[in-house]
Length: 173
Image (cartoon, rainbow, N blue to C red; front, top):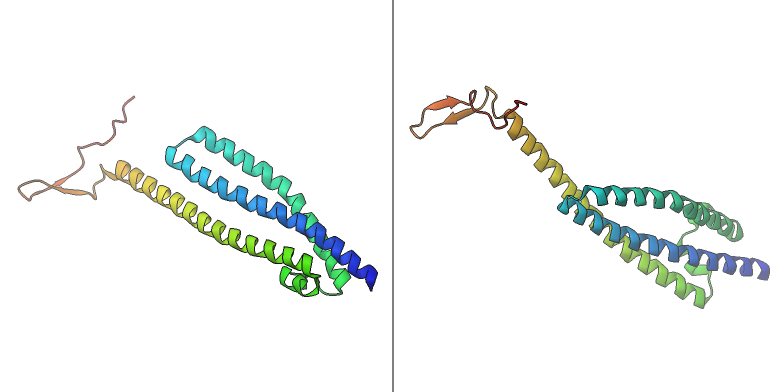
């Protein structure tokens, strides 16, 4: 039983290192979302491309981190004699000594706070991008629909005039 306890404690130490990396990853994502919104507002395409390339490169490297976390969870599931789905931070809190339990509780609270903040920032970014797309659609529609037959204009006397002869964009080259 003592060997199993030592194995669990060692795996928990490895998991705590993984959780620290998760915290850093979430903090980095928060910074990238802020930078993304800033670059969209500034319409800086070159920096946007660089940011998206760095996000892609980091997401590829983060996959190995996720695999390592899953491996540790599997080993903990075997050591605790339970299913992988049952290996949660809350479950681990119940079987750990006080020192490791306090560390797990701290990491869990920090992760919860950061994920809530990440959800808010993600929603803000999604709303900004949605508004930009809506604005662009309306702008393009107003540019290309101006000369169509279906649009009716009223002059100062109240009579109607079709917008057939008026053009918003000169398409001659």
